[in-house]
Image (tube, rainbow, N blue to C red; front, side, top):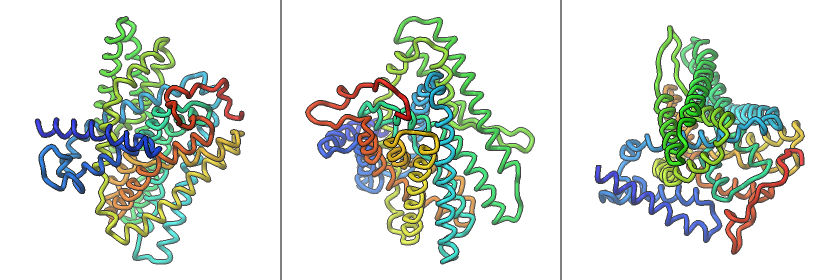
Length: 430
């Protein structure tokens, strides 16, 4: 236990010190945390075997997974704050069109690229693995995006659209992955399961939204009985922890496997609470400040999880490069086409796709499931490689795109934290 505490303190302080260096280089703090975690992980400092100096093994990092899950819960709860009725009325249709179309087009392009690679060299990748990777490509990591938005106080129509698109991306990605993985299993086994392809993903989404809505309503009813800011903050934190715990449960009804999506549950909790609670804005700001150290640890641990061994495998590198290029093209073109079709401004149309590149936890979870395939280990290695690239490059690209869209003030002598102000209008077509 004492070793774990020393590791966590080392990770927290080390990550923050790295952010000072990143600031001098003009990089987002989240990139510094990831690099700090990579240096403290089992493939760098952790390999020295000195207790407390980094993480000595992948198992030690995995044992702290509950911290990462909790951080994701708070991230989703915070993103739920973006789904206020006023904003939904003004851009609800755009969010749905952009969220669905960019994910579907990404899956199609990655499928086409990897199936084409299979046709050229069948020994490199199977069709089942190709279509599974195509579905995994649809997932976008909300954590890195939210951290960049927070650090630079980005605000404006593209920022609001981005956070909402990232939020619904989990539901869209879940359906695409479940359907594609079901087809992949059928190709290998010769038997199609309609329950796993069609029923289970819909059940998971419905159960997640239902549990989240119930938790948000109960949270509001409980909060009404308290007036102290500290007590209200404590109750909010307690409810997020509760929803994170409940979302990890699974059960069986007949032949249907029922589970919850942590991101959807916590996002729905935040959405309902923020729409029915008149003091939610102030409370959400206090929750954000309370969770700041947890977010630092989340990204440091994410960096420590990055497996450097995958870059030594030529096959993984080849498939990984094809995957990254086709996924990046899919995200950009999908966002470009959908934004243009829904009448978004030229600035949003040109830059939104770049902000959708980060990929991490959700994709890794899907890759873990994909290990059931005959070459599932290769699928997981490709996803690990892409996460390594996207997590280190994605935050800086997000910062660049938001700055180019005019929603982050360029940093000079004055911090962007203080100079950025909300725009007078949040009209997406402006």
